[in-house]
Structure formats: C-alpha cells, structure tokens
Amino acid sequence: GQNIDQPTEMTATEGAIVQINCTYQTSGFNGLFWYQQHAGEAPTFLSYNVLDGLEEKGRFSSFLSRSKGYSYLLLKELQMKDSASYLCAVRDSNYQLIWGAGTKLIIKP
Amino acid sequence: IAGITQAPTSQILAAGRRMTLRCTQDMRHNAMYWYRQDLGLGLRLIHYSNTAGTTGKGEVPDGYSVSRANTDDFPLTLASAVPSQTSVYFCASSDISGANVLTFGAGSRLTVL
Image (spheres, rainbow over the protein chains, first blue to last red):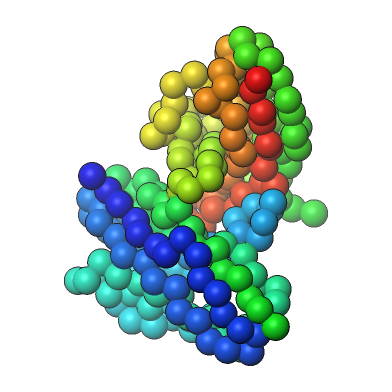
C-alpha cells in the first residue's frame, strides 16, 4: 500500500528553527508537495520538489531524497503565525496525490 | 478576487437527505477535485475532473456523485447522506501543467445526524 508518514504534532519556540519530516512509500514518484493549513482554513501551497536537494523560499526550505523516500520542511525564524498544520503529499506514478495526515506545529512565545 | 468559492460553508442535515455542495472557480483551471478531510487522516480524493465533460473516481467515491458541465463549476452530490459522511469537504482546482499545484476552496463543513 501507499503510505505517507509525518509526526502528528511538534512544538517549537518563536524565533527558533524547526524541521518537519516526511517519509513516503508510494507506487512511483512524480513530485512531493508541502502545504500549510491554518486551523479552519484551506490548505495553501508552500513548496514542490521533484529532484533531490534543497529548495529555498524565504524562511521556508524543503529537502528531498528520492532514494530514501524522505523529505523535510525547514522553517526558520519562527513566527507565531507559523502555527498551523503542515501537509506532505506525494504524486504517484498515476499522477494521483497521496496525502499525509499532517503535522500540527505549535509555536510558543 | 480569483479563486474557488464553495457553498455552503457549513450545513447540518438529517441522514437520508440529499445534499449538493457547490464549487465554482474563476481561474479557468482544467482540473477540479473534491476531497474530504477527517481528523487524523490525510486528505482523501472523492472524485475529480481533468476537463469539462469528464469525471473520474478517487479513493473514496461511494455515496457521492459529481458533474462537470462547464469549466467553472464542479458540484458534489450526496444522494442519501449517512453519518459517516460527516466531514469537511474541500474543492480544489489546478492547471494541469508544470507542478500542477492545487488551489483549494475554503471548505464546507457537513454534519449528518
């Protein structure tokens, strides 16, 4: 079966750095996505990785290792507004998105 | 403002009733999707449409139907609602090119009693 694993919940301090991991086992691979979802709101796109390596976008970076079936989302200089759930999703060989259950990130002052 | 509009925002209905969730996008995206989101689970695809006039079944299609008469609208119908269909429903769309990033509507919270 296809599976995406992420930690259920993480806590970090304002101004710090946090890394949210995602491991996947899917039928093929055609890209990995990270979305942010604030409570009660819609998911919004953060990043896309299709090749190995690090993609940096401001305070957020996303890393991919296809051989290890592994990705992480790195958030720097954490702000209170970063409190949200972070969803990892992989596009499989049929171009269907497989979603993880999401990681709830709690930021403390 | 370009985006996706879903209606209703929230609804409570009795089991056995018929319900249609509406979804309209103004981005001229080819593809549209319906997902449900339940606590502790990832988003699950119910139905999708790659272009107007075509639809396909996702991971959890039973009890739901869709239509795609034009590019902009993609309604989801529950013919006879059951309590297990209590969920938050998200409509999404994408332009099938490049990364094929999804844009989501604000969601419809449905409670079936």
